[in-house]
Structures are given as C-alpha cells and as structure tokens.
Image (cartoon, rainbow, N blue to C red; front, side, top):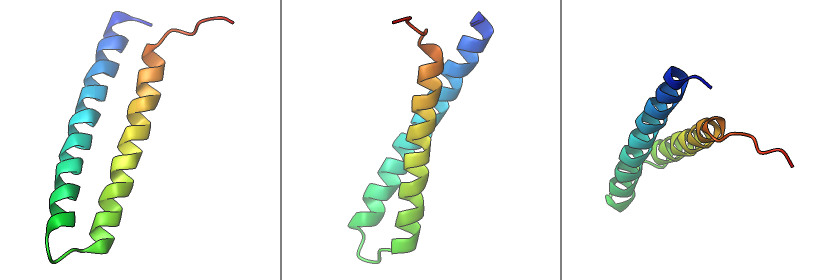
Length: 68
C-alpha cells in the first residue's frame, strides 16, 4: 500500500473515531435525560455501531496479510 493511501486511511479512521466518541457522549446524555426519545437513541446507537464496523474494516486494510 502506498504511503498516501495509508495516510488517507489513518485520517479517515481518526475522523470516524472522533464521530464515534461524540455519538457515545450524545447517547450517554440522552439516555440520562428524563425526556428520552427512544427512536432517536436507537438511530444513534445504530450509527455508532456502523461507525465501529467501518473503523474495523479500515484498520484491517492497514494491517498487512500474514501468510499462514
């Protein structure tokens, strides 16, 4: 993989991780509030899970394949 590609992947991973952390904070605050919107919470949790999956996929692309 080229250096530019690696840097692009790392930047994308950092961006997704930041969004993931931000969503975690929002979910935490919403779940503690008395006027919980369950549908909104559910959507945020799904988005957070999607981000985690995308982060994992990109991190695997950075890891070289090791032949068995």
